[in-house]
Image 1 (cartoon, rainbow, N blue to C red):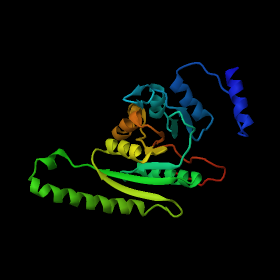
Image 2: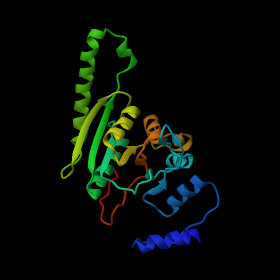
Image 3: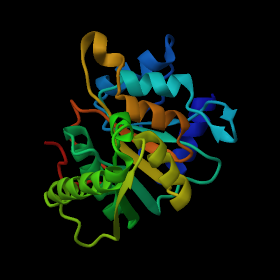
Image 4: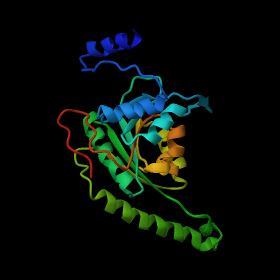
Length: 241
């Protein structure tokens, strides 16, 4: 009865719906298998979880779905209505971050949102035990090299018509991503995850895993494989490989 009432409310907003599904079994397994069966383009769920240091931690069911699903997963967090005015997309020049940025560009166009593209370079512990006199110059050389990679990576994307900010930071990637979200009050994080099969399917990448557990805003986690397109509107272009 609750499902029928909820479905009616959605229809009253002018949104097409299918018949509600009531299934028995493991929560995450059923959601992932149903998404495959109905050929869903995206799984949308609530963040759940509990407060820790005034930050809503990611719920265990949401994390399981992200790990198990080959499809994009949108996790909605916070009590405010879901609104996208500012999008953050961190990149590390991998195939996963390339896919994430393609989606971020599409979302930014669709919602007329600001897009911030962030990349972070780390200085290893080895550098700190070297001569401190040369450390500053070495870090600057690393920043310049990373800047060149960043520019080369971005040259493959069409950012025309968007309000875009490009930023390079030095530090621990997951911590810098969270700091940027907090400082810029981002509404949505779009981040790539490692798409694996078999026993390694539980892995999603250490940086992504750390970020999504503590991120205060809504986010989309994108896997490496089996993502053909994310249909935000009827005539969206294919954003796969």
